[in-house]
Each structure stands twice: as structure tokens, then as C-alpha cells.
Length: 231
Image (tube, rainbow, N blue to C red; front, side, top):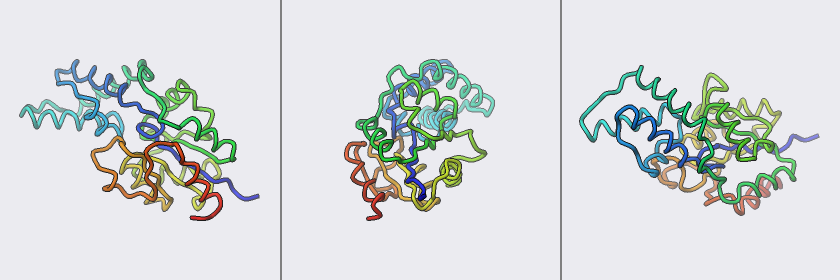
């Protein structure tokens, strides 16, 4: 029996528009610790590599603008815990599925495609979000940022997830929204589908990809070509 085709998905900015809820958590923390709040577009540029990276980058940017640097490692750790605590209680206030995502996941299931999440979001937060937005049952595995001792852009995050679900690296593909996802897919030597308007500072033409899509509507046509070995 031949192995199933496997699709790996990033989560934030790919399957789910989480930026509004990430912004609320971010601004809650920044206000509490005496920093200025950030706008939604700012958060989307910072959200692709986890809470700690987001807060550190945001603090650094604000410090450059104000000339005031208050950052210490202890404070960053404290702020990250506060962020996760607030976010975990408000994880789905305004987050929504990407356009066409539910229909595409249903199509994949009907076509016996294995699916897994590879995200730098903490595993328990990822599972909680997937359950609350009602798509958890589509996935064979959820590999969060703390599931392994490494995460994206390290390709092992993808490679080991494929191995765990019994997939074949030669019959696998990654869908994501940033260079973090792209670099992991490239390192794993699997095709990469890039979703536009991702959580990154880079433009689409600055990120390596095999296919570029606006949302999940029509992605079935691309995947069908892989299923039929046309690509």
C-alpha cells in the first residue's frame, strides 16, 4: 500500500487569522510594563516566530524610536509569561479561519491526505486554538514550538513530524505564510505553498516558494497535480 500524501500547515497567519488576539495580548503586556502599544500591522510583522521573539522585537523597535532601553532577560521572560497567560484566556476573541480553509481541509480529508500542524506557537496553545476554532480533528499531529528541542526554520521540525505520522518526505508539502516556513520547507526539500499577506516583514517576492496563493480557495487544483504526479 502506497503512503498517503502529507500536507503540513503553519498556524498563525496561515490557517487562522490570529493577529487581532495576539495584538490584544501584546498590548496588554506592553501597557502593563510601561511600553507603547502597537497596531495590527506591526503585530503581523512580528508574530511569526513566537511570543518571546515578538515581545523582544517590539521592545527593541520602540527603544530605538524613544532612545530608552529598559530590556533585560528577566523582564522579557516575565513579560512572555504574562503574554501567554493573557493570550491563553483570550485566544479566540477575534481570530478567524483563513478564507476557504475549512472547505480545503474537508477536501483533503475526503481525499485521504494526511495533515499536521508545524507551528512555533506553544503546543498546548496550538491545540487549544484548533479545538476552539473547530478544526482540531482534521490533523494527525500538532508539532508546536516546544514539542521538540528545535523548531522552524530548522527543517527537522517538518521532517520529524512527517516521520511521526508515517508520511513520506517525497510525498509531502508545506503551506505557510513567512520566510520561517519557507526556509524550513526548503531545508527539508519539500515544496512550499506561500500564502500572501503573511505574518512577516518580507514581501512575497522576497520569500522562496513554489506556489503563491491568496487564500485556500482553489488550492485543491495545485494539490491534485501532486496527487497525480504531474509536478
